[in-house]
Amino acid sequence: MSRFILIASGKGGVGKTTTAVNLATAMHSMDEDVTLVDVNFTTPNVGIHLGAPVVPITLNHVLSGRAEIADAIYEHESGIKVIPSSISISELKKLEESNLSSIVKDLNHISDTVLLDSAAGLGSEAMTSMSIADDVVIVTNPEMPAVTDALKTAKIAEELGKNVLGVIVTRTNGSKSEMSLKSIKEMLEIPILGVIPEDDCVKEALAMRNAVFLTHPYSKAAVSYGEIAGKILGKRFEAPKRSFFARVFGL
Picture (cartoon, helix red, strand yellow):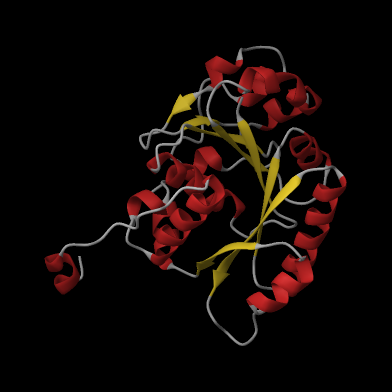
């Protein structure tokens, strides 16, 4: 049986998809069989992040009964399996998101871990995705509006009987204007799984259409994602070490 982990956020633009992509690749590096599913039907971004915005068969085709789930699985160069959703407006109109729960049994034996990249907020898409999850990880920024929306997401997840693993705080830069980790933890009353610092490497990886965990493995963001993935899986993450010459010459 697969473990379904929903990557959720109370609002958009906090780095939810970036987090989902990097957690998937980091988990795979620890010998975990991982499938990443884009269940953000309105604004799907997993395919864009991984350099394949358009593919022949998507999750939309499966949910509308025009394809089997096996036909929508693609293998990324990292080794993770990916089930993208369509960026087409016409495909969105044909979508039957309510059918998502009916394909869980087909997803159940695909991988050890199935990461679900949810739609932001608490609309019907996000609620449908949350209904099939075992665990929920919430992504937020250290800003009051984002943390407030994260609190709503955590409370709804708990009301649905989901196991909220904790929160990942992204884009921290140590400025006086951002909320402290202590304040965030006290407000949300859930564990902080980790912190992702503001890192230009994340933007460079996005431009390269890949995970920062793969393109910049020595970066602070990549190492943080690795540590968080290890914490979720209960495995030890070994951060890569640069050679002496790489450190001296800044490679």
